[in-house]
Each structure stands twice: as structure tokens, then as C-alpha cells.
Image (spheres, rainbow over the protein chains, first blue to last red):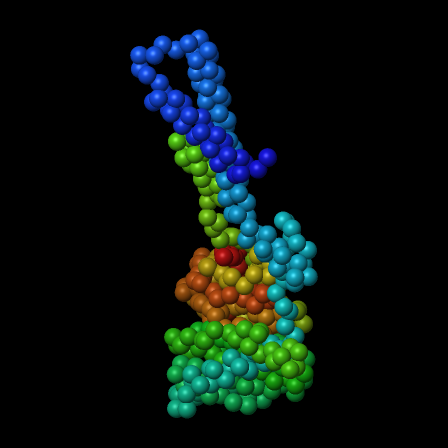
Length: 235
Length: 165
């Protein structure tokens, strides 16, 4: 039986019984002596009242337990919703399953993210050149007395542009297989001016693009993958 | 009254079941995990030894190491809250390390540390603060340079630690 529908009914019965008893007692003369039949009926009513009261108490307790159980179930509801989302993304629902894996960008998409990031940094760098920093950076890149690294001296410096404590360095490597090692060597060579950097490489063309924070500049947040995925290209 | 008591008991149970707030995951790795950028066909790859971390003795050429940093949190991009490298610097303060986050292709994301110098000779600790998040498919990397020694001792990377959020 449904506890919620039963409870008001039991309360109504109890109210009727109590009301009837009250009505009976109010109409009975105080001096009237109860007959044995009346006494029996009264005892019977009291017994029924007690029985009903017990049932009401018992059902109130059951309803309370049910409410707690429902509250606990609602506490886990977000997990259930997440599981449903997982299922929508192709992951198996249920507890203990891995969260959905984030989209894995392609190399081209990563380059597109870096290009957007670098255009933001270009704007931050501004149009006024920091000639002093540019000279220091070029000196470090061509310093013959520093550690003679392996592939960096063979690279072409396409650009060194500094401003607002940001320096952009673009380089090309004829042998494209050297470009990743060149990325490492660039950081070695510019360590004294490196207060944080962001660097990307086009492995197909051997071009390297880097931005160095030479002071206390702060890089903008890296663009999200969704920012560079155009719907017409299908990502 | 019964209801209040039951609610209180349930609340206590829920609080205990939830447990304490989870702290960051701390990792410690021996310096042996660091790999020389150059193999032994280059002067930068010679005179490197493993055991008690990685160490080198060379009065002419620097040594360059890439030190991997495992991620427990898999594909998360939550970043590192701190990192430390325990070293012995025989170049009297020229040894440096940098901490970077890269994407899966090796491109360097913004938010890395730049070069942090040991600050002096002997036993030192190079410390890093907050490192911004990685790309979900990328990695963190510690890069360390042992500059040519100016003492009679080897330079060491004993161990390195990092705290993943």
C-alpha cells in the first residue's frame, strides 16, 4: 500500500473516532452512570484508538525513512546524469567507468591554436620595438663563446621582435628533422632571458615560432580547441 | 524528535562517507629518470653517470637533461601547484632547470617557468611555484642543465618532486 495515500486516510479515521468519542461524552449527562454495554463500547473505542495511534506512529516513521532514502538518492542524482552524458559521448555509463576523454586535437589544429595565441601576443607586444632586448637576444643566438650547440647555429633567424617584455623569435631549419632539437637548443641558448616561453613548430616546413617573456609579462590563456574548429570544416 | 535525530544521524553518516578534502598528489622521482638530450656521440652526452640520481663531471661542456613527470590524473589539465629539484651544483650557481607543459606533439604551452638557477654551489634546491595547466593530451617536463663544473666534484640531480593538483 502507498504510505502517502494511507497516512491521510488513517488520520481521518482517527479524527472520526476521536470526534465521535468527544461528541458522545459532551452529550452524555455527567451524572449518568455508564451501563456495562457502554463501558464495553468505550473500552472498545479506546482500544481502537490506541491501535490506530500505533499504526499512525509506525507509518510516520516509515514515511520519514522513505524521505531520507529519497534525499540520499537525490544526492547521487548528478552521477546518474553524468553517466547519461557519458553514454551520449560514447562512453559506457555506470559507476567506476572512466570520465569521457577530451577531444584529441590534430597537429594542424594545435598549430591553429598557437597561431591564434601568437596573434594575441603580437598585439600585446605592440608596435614600439624594444631595441635593447632585440639586440641582447640576437647576441645570445649568435654568441660564439656560448655552448656551441648542434643544430641551432645552422638555423636561419627570420625574426626577433621585442616589446612590452615580450620577444618573438621565428627561425627556420633547412633540415626539418632538426627542428625539435632546435626547439630545445633555443631554450638553452636563451635561458638567461627566459622567464617563461611558448613555442610551436611546424614539423613539415621546419619553421619554429617562439615567444619569450623577458620580464614580468603575462601570457594570455591558451585558446581552447573549440575556438579554432570551424563547423563548416567539420573540425 | 525522532525525525530530527534520524536526519542528524544521516547527515553525520554522509559527512563521514564524503571524507576529508582531497589534497594534491605529490610525486618524487630519482634523478636517474632524467635522460640526456644528447647521446654519447656528442660531447654534451659524455661523462654522464647514473646512480644516486644522475651526475656528470665535465669542465668544458654542459650537460642537458629532460626529466619526465608522470601524471596520475591522466587526461586532466589541472596543472602543478609546485615542484622542486634537489641538486648538487658543481658549477657554483650556473646550473638551472625549467618546468614546462607541452602538448602531445612537443609544442610548449604558455605558463611554464622559464629558467630557474640553483643560486649557488653545493647542495641546492631549485623550486617552482604554480605551473599552469597542461593540454589534456600533453605532458609536463623538467629540463635541467648542468653547466661545466668549476670544482673537483660532480654535479648531480638527486631527485625531483612535483605536486599535481
